[in-house]
Each structure stands twice: as structure tokens, then as C-alpha cells.
Length: 245
Image (tube, rainbow, N blue to C red; front, side, top):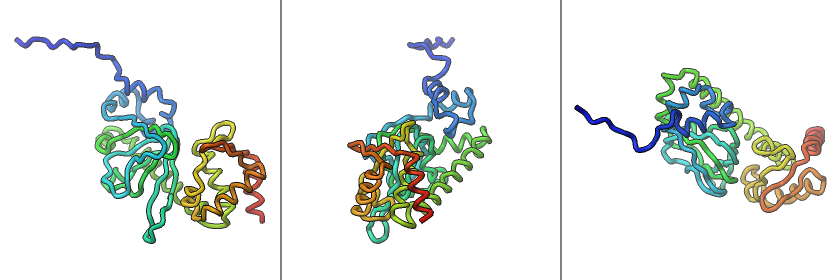
């Protein structure tokens, strides 16, 4: 007769990570928002919630992709080096975005991902997505929609932020930063001038000159060390004048 195994601690009815996923305010916007409570309970052991400090690297370009990530809070930038040796920031991602999708195709990550601000993430291993594909068909549709949104965001970045007048590019960047992480009062994270140059393909001097002009015009209020407040009405008016002129 087998001796019964008595646990040394109480087993909760619901795993803490499953409860955290269920209560997460981003759940409706996250990849697993399509899962019910039972679905969350089944996957809890595979989910991790790493945090990164500003400047820390999440993964590097060319590294084997083993997981995708949902951004819970903060902003992450994606960098690559051109054939000529120039650093370029090719896009940003923020709250609710899914990143690292290359891993789902067993491809290496295309770019280096670096935290612009303190970053909180949900790490979702590739094998979990593969397993859920058959059991939760709605997941596949959600995944395709997110991939399409990421593609549209990348195309918009190229169209709006790397071509045209330098002033308009910087105005569009401020608009993008506001949508990524701005609060009700227009408080945003503001990149360093060299990072603005790497994002918008302009010199540091040009970026500094335009930021100073927008500050004088009341579009932007600088809040050291790495923040600013955007006057949304003034920003929209400046964009309209730029497009009209």
C-alpha cells in the first residue's frame, strides 16, 4: 500500500501568476486577453514577468529567439547598425505591444532591444504559443492581428519619421511618444538628442535646435532628467502649420 503524500503547504486553488494575469489591467490588450480563467490557469507556469532598468538590453540582434514579450509598462527601442557603421533606432514599442515575434518562426531577433525607461514585461516562451495554437484557435487570430499592427507601426515609422522636413519628423516623434507613454497631462519620456538623431536620421545639432525652438513656442516643456510635457493642442497646431506650409 502506497503511503499518501501530504503537502507541506497549502496549494492555492489558483496559481498566483494566473491570478495576476487575470487581474492585469492590460489583459484586454495583451496576447492572452482572449483566454478565459481556465486558460490562464493552464499556462501560468510558463509565464515570467521580468523587469529591466533604463539602458538594459532585453535581447540582441542575431540572437536565437526563444520567447516573445508583452510590454506591461515602459518604452523599449530597437536598434541596428547599418552597413556603413551608423547606429539607427528603427522603432519604439510601449505599453500593450507584443515584441520579439521573430521567435515564433524560430528566426533570430532582428534588432537589439533596449529599455528606454524602467521596463516591465511578460515573457511568453515560444513553445507555449506553439502548444496553444491547437488548443486555443482564437489565439492564432489574435497573434496575426498583432503581427499586422506591428507591421503597420513599422511602415508608419519609415513613412513619418525618416523622411520629409526635420521639424515635421520631430513633431511626429513627439506625437508617437505621447501615444506610447504619455499621461493625462501630456507627460512623456524624452530621448537624448543623440537618440533623437538616431531615430530621425538627423544630426544632434539639428535635433537640439528644433527642440529648443519647440520649447520657446510652448509646444514642449523640458523636465529633467529625461522627461517633458507636451502641449497637445500646440503640437497639433504646429503639425497643421507644417503640413500647410
